[in-house]
Amino acid sequence: MSNKQIENRTRLESGVTLIEMLVVMTIIALFVALVLPNYLKHGDAARVTATHAQIRNFQTALGAFKLDTGTFPTSEQGLAALRIRPEGLNQWAGPYIQQDIPKDPWGHDYTYKYPGDHGDDPDITSYGADGQPGGDGLNADIVSWKSQ
Image 1 (cartoon, rainbow, N blue to C red):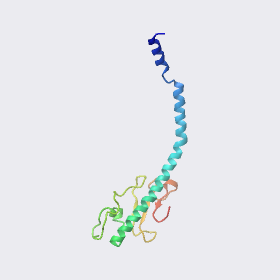
Image 2: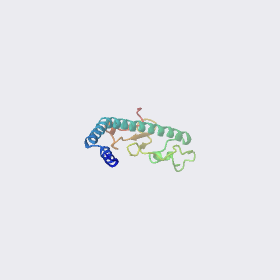
Image 3: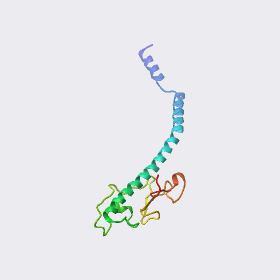
Image 4: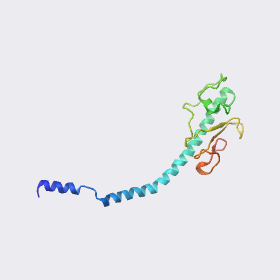
C-alpha cells in the first residue's frame, strides 16, 4: 500500500459513527433526566433560604435604623429608608444597607409594613415564587414574624 492509500484509510476510519453518536446522546439525556430534577429542587430550597437570610438582614438594618432615629421607617418610607435619608430625620446615620434594596430571589419586591400586624417590629414579606399572597410550597409567603 502506498502512503497516500494508508493516509486516506486512516482519515476514513478516524470519524465517529452514527451509532456511537447516538449512544453518547442517550447517555447525556439519561444523565440530564436523572440529575436535573434534583438540581432544581436544591435551587428552589436555596431561594427560600436566601429569602429568609435577606429578611434577617433587613431586620438587623432596621434595628440599627431604630437605634439611631428612635423609630422604624413608616410604611410609606419603606425599606428605601435604609439607603436614603427620609425627610426630617436628622439622626439618620445610614446607609444601613450597602447595596440597593434587592428584590426577592424570584424577582419580586419585598413588602414592608410598619406598624406591623404581628408585634412591635415591622412586617416584611416575600410572596414566594408566584408573587401573590398566600400559597403553598414554593408559592408560600416568607414572612419576618415566623422563624425558618
